Image (cartoon, rainbow, N blue to C red; front, side, top):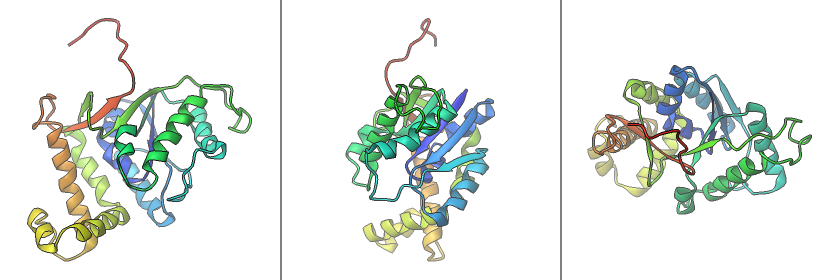
Length: 245
């Protein structure tokens, strides 16, 4: 099976790192593409992906605040989809993105959905690399508000945390936002490992706690049956031959 992670930002590869690592361990082929990533962050994203076992990361080169639904924007994604020909795609949840005021998230969700749709049609074949159309693959939305799938990630959770630790640019960026939202005293009380005053340490240790809390909330703290869970929402209905436990 081929899995394609369509990430908005590099951090999303690690956010889905449990499911991606489990797929690789099962013998699946995993590719990742990042729509927006600064040049200085790309080596970190590549290293984080390699820790998870992902050797193939593509950067689509779109700048923040410049995402649109033009044919030119769709071409690069359609070319990727037709070339990789995934059986399964993981992407941002459109429902979550709709209410998220993070720049570009709403448009990215629409862009990916539109590219998935036209990739199955006779649309700009030559411009998209000459690859034939593909059937729309199975789509899973990451970190949804209302999941219908939970992946058990206990066996690979340490790997996910290791990959997170190398994303120093993203971790520092997150820390800057947290310090604008909460006092240092509050942050130190909830992130005890932040004891050196460094923004990178604050971001790294804070993200570690957030990842752990999210995994527990979808695991032991829920009725999912998982210990540490990674939540997804599958698009559409599940087609099965029979009901199974």
